[in-house]
Image (cartoon, rainbow, N blue to C red; front, top):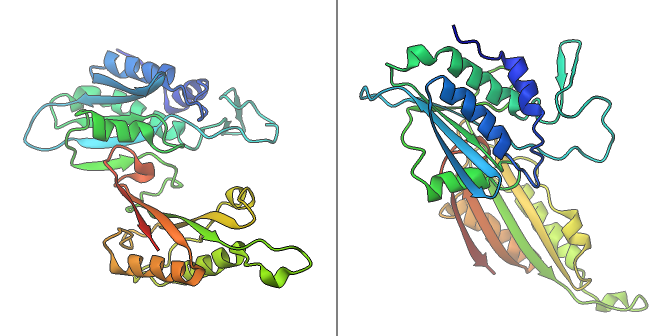
Length: 304
């Protein structure tokens, strides 16, 4: 009888791979998962959008006229942060029933859980519609792995439903965040400190535009709290300011944040008129948490 690792053991093994993004370097981690799944009879395909930036698609099952069930997750992690860790950051610390390590929650544990379940059920899945596992690189810094799979390969195929292994407190949730990213530039006039009345403050203009967006009713749920990039603000020239704003919703019925939505166009135009700014608007919507495994619809346009 074949023995496979349990979910905790596999999570600790995945944590031992340093896949901090940037730079990512998910290849070794993806290869380890691929070897386990291949040994259980899964068909394995790898897809690298850059050197060592490897995603994995694993399938098992046969054509029964019904689509397979899909599972997806990513194997890159965010950086360790500036503060020193009290526990080992790469999976060696298991204390009091808690597993510590970068990616233990987001989301190598989720990947380990559905991989272990797939391994345990492989024999039963062979003669069924089966499952497709999509394990991606570069979710944390732009979803480059998922975008490559969707746009540059034919590996994804068709699935009947998709389960995303992101942490949700062990409650199944139906829904996805929609996001609207705005980047705008406000311009002003510099003035000497002795004559400030001759100046025109670009930061004040940006603040008015952000406030318009923050209070705008998009017609369904209230968007998430707006954030804008202070680093880019304070790095700007005194006479000009580039700023960003993010809108999101986690409801199961999402606001339409597409550029075709007249309310979105009105919100952007209203805020830009308020700030007398020009805006380069990048709008994207993805069908899976984190943008994984599904083609995103993104476009850029300018509004004055």
